[in-house]
Image 1 (tube, rainbow, N blue to C red):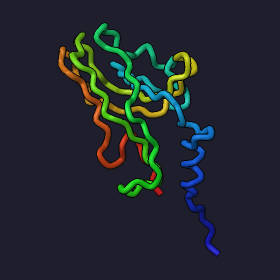
Image 2 (image 1 turned 90 degrees about the vertical axis):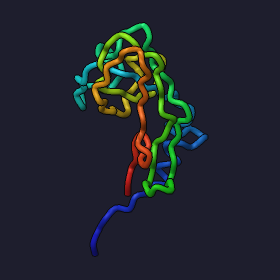
Image 3 (image 1 turned 180 degrees about the vertical axis):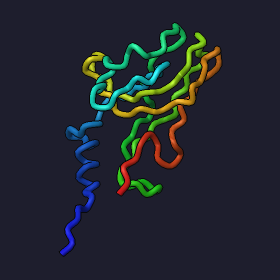
Length: 146
């Protein structure tokens, strides 16, 4: 008999989002922009570990992700898909370079706020224009496929 695991996405989705205490239920998911990509997987787990690379110009501020959602079996075919509205920073000045963005769950302080996803940037130079992080049309922020 061939042995293999079957993805139990209903159970995982419930664990992540269940109103009775699922992990992402009520979570405040935020996004930050950084001017360098010094992330080290396994070493940098919290916002405090990479905050030194965050944009410093006064026109910049972190954003709370609007319409953050965890979808079970979306029409695009993934088992679980994480989505949100594309965040926009308007009139971002300072001539800094956006190298990377991080999505994290805000929990009272940078030291307690875990990093969830790193999004590689296009080395956008801020020069007073708008900067938009555009999530993938099919996969959203991230997707878990079966």
